[in-house]
Image (tube, rainbow, N blue to C red; front, side, top):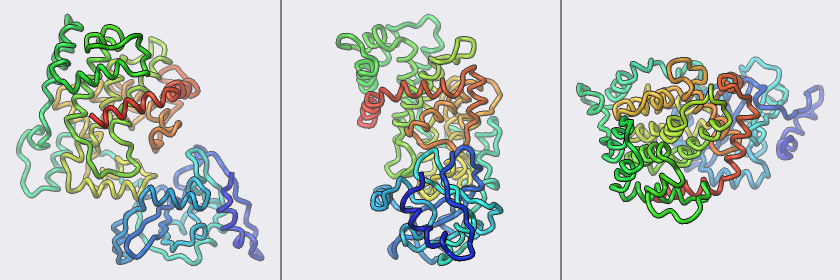
Amino acid sequence: MIPAALKTAIEPYHRQEDQHYSTPSAVDRETVDLEQIVTMVLVKDTLGRTQVIFPADCLFDIHTLSKQMGRELEPLKHEDVAKLLSSYNVAAIPAIPDITGLPAMVDSRVFAMPFDDIYLDAGDRNTLIKIDKGLFLATLNNTQQGAFTIPLATIPSNQCHQDEDAQCINQAVEKFTTRRIKQRIEDTLELPPLPKSAQAIIKLRADGEAGCDELSSIVEKDPSLSAQVVSWAASSLYNAPGKIKSVHDAIIRVLGFDLVMNLSIGLSLGASLKAPIDTAQNRPAYWHEALWTALSTTALIAKIEAPYRPNFGMAYLSGLLHNIGYLALAHIFPPHFKLICLYMDANPHVDPSVIEHHLLGITSEQVGSQLMTVWGLPAEVITAMRHQKNGRYQGANAEYAKLLTLSKYVLAKRGIIPMPTYTPVAEICAFFNINEAIALEAGDLLFEKKDDVDNMVKQLDDA
């Protein structure tokens, strides 16, 4: 469906004499290459608001544009964008300047796009608007032009092999400090020590004869962790009969040994790195993304037959910890984390790992997997975290990385988290001997419990 505001904005250009522009139409986003899409970001400073229009296969360098315009630009806040969307009765503003009437700055790469048709955001996750390039360029006649983007193809999201991650992190730290780094990786990163409760549970994992008594004894020594496990078991998500009175009760009657062990590790490690106060607007809150992803992995596992099914506990723990690298990045590079968030807000169409690598030379996935290595987490979790954005990874424990990739795609289709830049859905589903419809059905079943999950997320945010 074409937004009414767009129809109104392009009508004067469409009716110009001697022009034969085709009528705009709605198309499926998944059928369009990124290089044919033009996107728009709203920025502001003390002088007012500006529309910034550029190709979607590029990174918007907001600092370069600020220098060119002699201004101090920052992306418009979500609440201000929401007011604009409401006033124009659209879900997203297509890259047509006349829709808002705000001054516009257009990147020069837009005019060089070698296509007869251009595609614009239509306002939902699955649809784009196809528009004749001549008609689109006609709407840009009264705009300013500049060169302020970087092609994404020139920004590798990850140049390091997994075995070289520690070296890459050291190099990045050296880049942003005045002293040479000579200590081991633990000292270099100045990360908090592994929480005692997590240390004890990881040690317990290696004990094949350990049982519920030993696990509950460890968890109960940490009052905060103990309260979270009990409240978890009492959640309406699990519909446990009767009242849950203790950690031992939660293990025996509701959650089970394996789930409580992995849940406790995830909660302990997540709590050891505090979420930054100032974060990117488009970045989901830490526990929101962590918990939904963990539950999504288990929902998918329920649909995968035994010969192809990853271990439930390892999958759950991978999901619960998959985004801890983002917290670690804020911990290691506090002066520069704000810059990363600024670029994320200015480039909601770009995968965060590309921005992180462009600005720091490393990604949160590298930092997170290295942290897990230092803390002695299982290889399955380390691999899943490191390769969660590489759906075609084929190394050891690839099933956990692929499961994370598919889980995030399923959540994105339901609007729980932003859509990943690229997911080889058909390939991953074939790997697990399922199809996309089955994967999405798993997500639908989980989404039916949205209120229960959101309540659990709130408990973690308040802890």
